[in-house]
Amino acid sequence: MQLHGEQIIGGETSLEGKRVFTAVNPATGQALEPEFRDATVGEVDRAMRLAEASFDELRGKSPEQRAALLDAIADEIEALGEPLLERMNAETGLPMGRCTGERGRTVGQTRMFAAMLREGSWVNAVIDRGNPDRQPMPKPDVRSMSVPIGPVVVFGASNFPLAIGVAGTDTTTALAAGCPVVVKAHPAHPGTCEMLARAIGKAMAKAGMPAGAFSMVHGAGHESGVALVDHPAAKAVGFTGSLRGGRAIFNAAAARPEPIPVYAEMGSTNPVFILPGALAERAEAIAQGYIQSVTLGVGQFCTNPGLVFGLKGDGLDTFIGAATKHATEAAPATMLHKGIHDSFVAGVARIGATHGVEVAGQSSADANGDAAQAPCVIFTTTAETLVEHEHLFEEVFGPSSIVVSCDEPSDIIEVASNLEGHLSATIHGTEQDLADHAHLVRILEKKVGRLVFNGFPTGIEVCHAMHHGGPYPASSDPHFTSIGAGSIFRWVRPVCYQSFPDAALPPELRNKNERGIWRKIDGETTRDDA
Image (cartoon, rainbow, N blue to C red; front, top):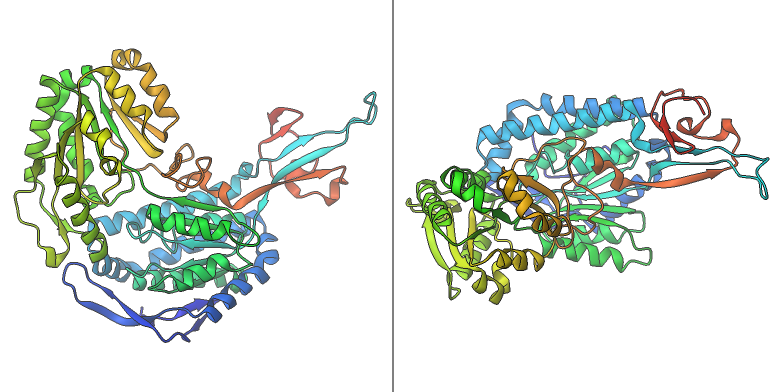
């Protein structure tokens, strides 16, 4: 596929902007053709107005028609073949194996949402039948279900160009719900974005969908993103990235004349707690898994384990020794782009310069800064030092982590109680450890969106039960997930129909359950007719 660097607006291309930029291969520093142009305010306005104009037609499509669209998107992504993977590799430095695996995840999750649409119960249909004979007042017939919220603005992630990008979860769930989408392409991999946008455009045409229901605009600066969030047609925003970026978008959306929800997945250090029984039984094995998790994807996962806590003693010493060995053996690798690399270097330097923090282990091979390479760096400190320096709690995006030794079990409880919100927390232990530290589990339930036992938080299973979110600052709204089946609920809202005639109701709420979906009728979940 030949790339043109244009905006893709409602199935047509546009090239009005004057400011140009290029993608850069992070491993070589070389610019990649072609040049891309920042979208103008006029192009953003056109994309948003087309989205608004297409909303009624898109939401009027049947679940089967929208499911067919998702299947077509998956097919078109696969049809891009090796050129998509090669461009992704060139723009991100991610190895081809990772690129291939992420394509599989993207296609798989898209088809999962298609199956969800066909099954249909996700609309949360609730029926409370009326009773005109009830005394002292008749009971009205009340029914409710979820309906699409309107045009959605999507900001893709830098670290998952496919699975959380132009054709990622945000886009596919919004289209599945019946919401038009306008995507802000990530400037670090614009060629990958263009290829995906063109694939979605083909799928939209094949599925008979309104062309205006999908657009993608470029922008190396903030102007096009701000214009998207500010546009009166926008009804919700999906964002995956840094705390600073997510908070800026959240603030802008809240300051609008009509505030809109922002579902931002942001920073997290994903604390790990290694309890005494686990340290006594398998400290070395845990250390090996820990370093594998820290270095997975060059540490560029929002679930990277950035803090580890354990009680001071022989078990923790064994863990630190093994972690040091594995960190030394870990080879430096290229990060996604120079900006992320520079931030990682600065973050590691800041931690290392903190009084009371020591480097326990670091990749023995030299990292090539010109190739944006990052080494694995493992620090050690004490709970006392940690609480004295707030910056040690902050996420450093990349392959680094801090092991914190605690003098007493009460230190672990105190540190856990003072944690901010995180996406995940991990506990390594035995069943007896869990019984002895039940209070720790109760604390962590208030701090995170996902609790992992005897594993590591990297490697998220895309499934119906997954919750990828957490209290602020991990995400802007802890009620919602950005990964898994539940992510579709960000783009819908409940509507209640009172005393409507049966024929005027949406099919999901009519007396006859024609779609055979699960519904709640008078408080009981059933597939029966009402």
